[in-house]
Length: 325
Ligand SMILES: Nc1ncnc2c1ncn2[C@@H]1O[C@H](COP(=O)(O)OP(=O)(O)OP(=O)(O)O)[C@@H](O)[C@H]1O
Image (cartoon, rainbow, N blue to C red):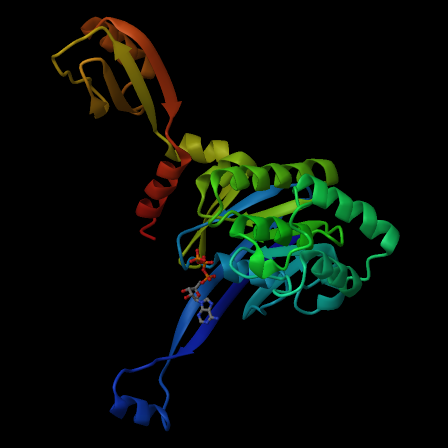
């Protein structure tokens, strides 16, 4: 459905020097630097997938989304989505995609949200009989009843984001590109947005490509992650594999009858300790979790034990360090 092969993109930007003399010089002579935002990126995405596209700031995520949505033209490489080349067949292609840039609005600032929806309906030439059930469903599931008659400028960020997502789906696209859809949202709105993305993926088969810095988004939504850093693709695979390969530690919390003597257990690092509770990080390459529990029970009278996998957030930070990005 989505196929990128050898995509590279660089930006040429004018160097700006400080000082009057340098500014005067710049009138006649400009010095440029090239930023290689994407280097030889290739991947394919099948229909119905939810893919988390992740990487640190400046990695090239937005640039990729812009190329895939036809806003930017790459320097080299091919990108075929639903049989289209996004930047060449833009008019026909955009009928099939929805795009949400968390930082930017596609809604008209001063008009009521509902009027923006109507305008988008006309732009995308959505027949009234198709528009009505779609918009009713979007208003209901995204809980927009009380806000669609307000202008966008009066909405909170969370309210606007829900409207943005609705706006991107008015024409029933097959693919949805979401660039930081939960940025700045409170916990309740984040969960609502995630739930909605899951629903449209399951019930309507919409393919979702999502960039985010929030690893909870990834855990809640994506089976597959594509990791990029400094413009290069570093990892493409399923979240469980990522955990298996890179997440070599587990977190164990043990409650025990009062014990005032701190203790050490081989292959673990103590994250916190009190006379009644210890939290250990276990290096599972050095010692088995069961072995740690046995050792614990030899040292203290155990009351309760919980074991958690290493948070995905930590694994990602570890990967960033490993790849030096
Ligand atoms: N219009 C532009 N002109 C010049 N350089 C740009 C432009 N857009 C992006 N860049 C540069 O290209 C690189 C990749 O930027 P991009 O916005 O794709 O990263 P990102 O992964 O989306 O980052 P973030 O997580 O911070 O949003 C960065 O070094 C950025 O400064």
